[in-house]
Image 1 (spheres, helix red, strand yellow):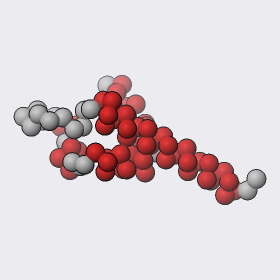
Image 2: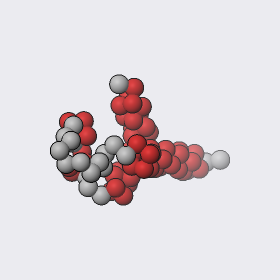
Image 3: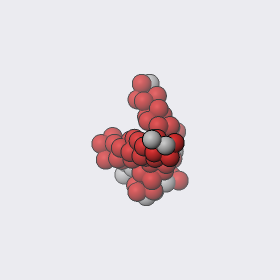
Image 4: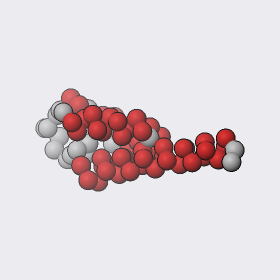
Length: 77
């Protein structure tokens, strides 16, 4: 087994974890993309910058384990 094999497996795991966190945030939690314009909460101000759900999922996919750690930290509060 070469270094490239392990790097490829690690990259696939990284992307899958980020993708599942993005899907969970958008479709299960439904926190970032609420429709109510009068409800403004500072931690969710990212919804003003990212209006497209697929863009948010793509960003979470690239962040990978960082998105998972941020999600776990945010849900523990």
